[in-house]
Image 1: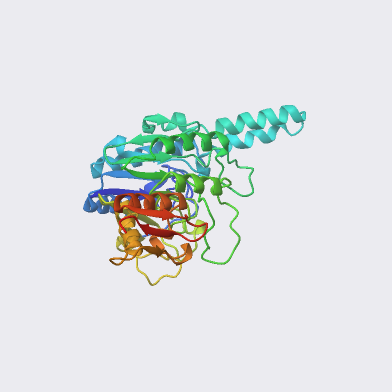
Image 2: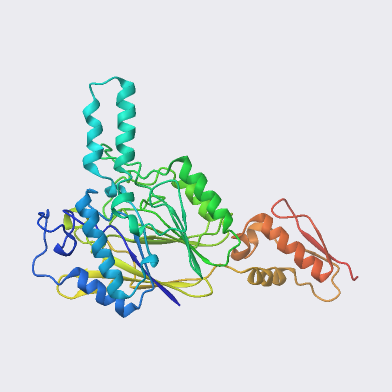
Length: 409
């Protein structure tokens, strides 16, 4: 078993709910009085869980200021050191709040300039604002191979490979909606990285900040902050067999297990919620949360979720809150293996003794496990079976009838 702590949306600074994650001397927008220490209780729970990795899926800060980055970095190091997680096993990506908003605002000073100067100044100021973490979080940049955006990259361990994308660096303070953006550079780069690991038996986990598709909110409302390139990214992670996608941004936890036609295996999407954002930035009935991902060797895993209680610290999520539609402990099954698919094929192909010809059921009538794989793979597995059993196969799925003829008769 391998245990990973999944944290997101710390919002260190003025949007935090706790002094534990606030710049000394700076005022918080809101504060919860008389509660237990969120940070100390977190350390205690992570020790109890004996985590080996910590991943943080963006919005480390409130406004991306130097003081927030410096103190947030110290807090993350303190947590990791106290729990016994090595620095190289603390893996972060950035969100839209990790843009230096003050630098981003400087682009507005060029409204009276020519359009050419306006555009160039805006682009350059936004590029600087989106890259400030390269300086303030320098020693946390532990990727084995760096991507085209700040804190995008690949980091590989014995049984796991983590991929990170930066969906926030092209966001800016002027955006009315903080919609995630990757651009073609990151998409092309991650496609290449995914393809390099397509045949790998290791766990493949993608982290980014923005959600790649819409979820329903606690209250009915449009969701405009989804990742712009979400459909393209979903195709890539499905085609290359990513196992788990972790993201933040929403402050509203969700877990969704999906298997679409053409994907190599089921994919679990984990919307993490927020570790410590204040009440004004989350629905009042949605708690602060963090999660434990417990990986098994057979590609099955457990997800455990904890919520923060002012009186009791981090406690198990309960299932009596409709705004937190997750259980404390959830189990996700391993992908279907070829050997299991072969067994299903054998079941539908088995011919009684002396039977010369058998027409197989139509594709729509096949067992669900066989319909869940790509048609090319289904036909390939059927061909392998026929070759081994010395049976001739005529036709192919899904074009029409598939007929088997016993060559021994």
